[in-house]
Image (cartoon, helix red, strand yellow):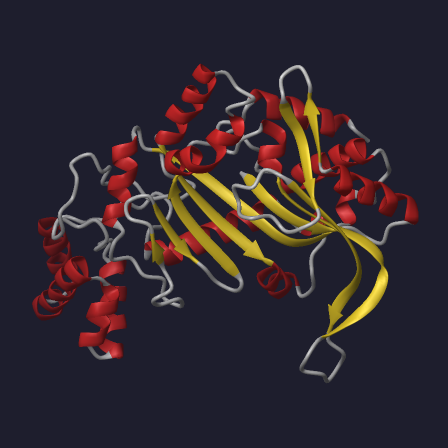
Length: 375
């Protein structure tokens, strides 16, 4: 699903500037009968991915690096606008489930909505520049305890190029920041209770809130945030909306998630039980190599990669790790550590997993149908 996006328009005329300025002063619109905030603008940046406002900024300068120069400088330009928001939340009011995975459709819907709210024509959505995309996926693990069990099993996980940067939030979340991409794994129920529920309590009936909470409690949510540095590297320029395809976003999601899961690939079920690991390693390698690999696997399971790497030569560490993964074995969630019986041993948050929760909400289907019909 597509969540938060940051896009910049081509240059716009004075009428658009005046409309945007007026909208940002007005800030928000309320449906008087219900007290519901229909939309809310801000001229600043959004607080976080849970922010349900639309950030719309008027800009007349850009950072530019001249040929041969190492340091970029700010130069004046014609006026353009930058938009940041969760398209998912603008469509549904929440981002628990049901959003579209089509980035171009999402941007087209967003621009058409802004045109209606601002009462002015905006540049064609295809020509807007893309500075950030949050590609997300949810997995239904049945209940809150199972989701939290998965996080406890990931206590020893590492990100090979971001050693020491993983931020752990007990049994509810993992956050791996980076300059080109950021990864988030979190229990949607906890996040919904902390942030979105209070924003929706004046909009929905109590039973409706509880229904959403029940759905969120079952979900493990994975979010891959693709930043402009990565986009520029992949496309050799800042891409336009028309350049971003579903295949590109799916590949990005798969590659980034695999880095943290170390070897989970598609439908492959990774072996974690010590007896099975021992049997497989001895069936694939010589007795001496299998014994060494099994010892490394035991240490990885108990202590994690960072500790084991410090106790081995780099060449041996990476060689052993590759051989273990090639054999279809893994140490995260192994029975060397305390595990919960509820944890689904065959689960990995990849797009081919049977627990994937990618239902599109009927209201989103209606909105998409409207957009498709627009010439």
